[in-house]
Amino acid sequence: MAAWVWVLIAVAVAAVLAIVLARALTRRRTSRLQERFGPEYNRTVSSADNRREAEAELQAREERRERLDIRPLAQTARARYIEMWRVTQAQFVDDPRSAVGGADSLIQSAMSDRGYPVEDFEQRAADVSVDHPRVVENYREGHRLARASADGDDSTENLRQAMKHYRALFDELVEPDADEPTAAERARTDGAVDTTDDKVRVR
Image (cartoon, rainbow, N blue to C red; front, side):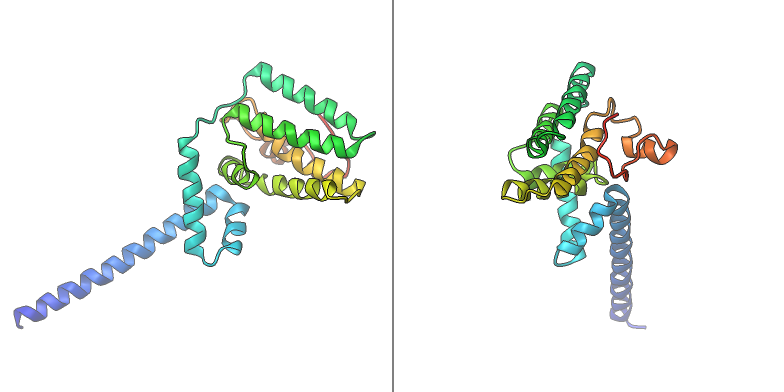
């Protein structure tokens, strides 16, 4: 067989191997991102033009997160935030709109103390989605309902839902240590927190 034929065969084999490797790496990347981001992965894919674009966005979030100095709250700061939330929660009975606004401010403050940039809401949500992907959608929904209230929607039910959504993220932001189970994880294992309760509660 002529030498050039062997060259063509070698090139074809190399091309096939390259395609197989590329597909394997793509599947591995997809699996890793799905595992890390959970429901946030599906949300990002559904809002992007294609899966590749969505995964590039999620990887960019990870890279940005690695450049941030995110730290757990000090014990005294954590206790202070929990007490401030309790006061804000109690305010809901008499002034729901102010309570929701206070909850939003508390979350921003806690995020700032932990090292997250807080200048822009969409960027806040993107940053926090890396560490708290299972509750970031609660944050977005709480923010949406709070904005609707600020624009004239006086529905107390919507404000109550906003508080519940905010609470889901707040619980994780004030976790004492990133290595400990999150509030949601504890709820799944021992039923300590009921996030589906119709009542807005504080532990």
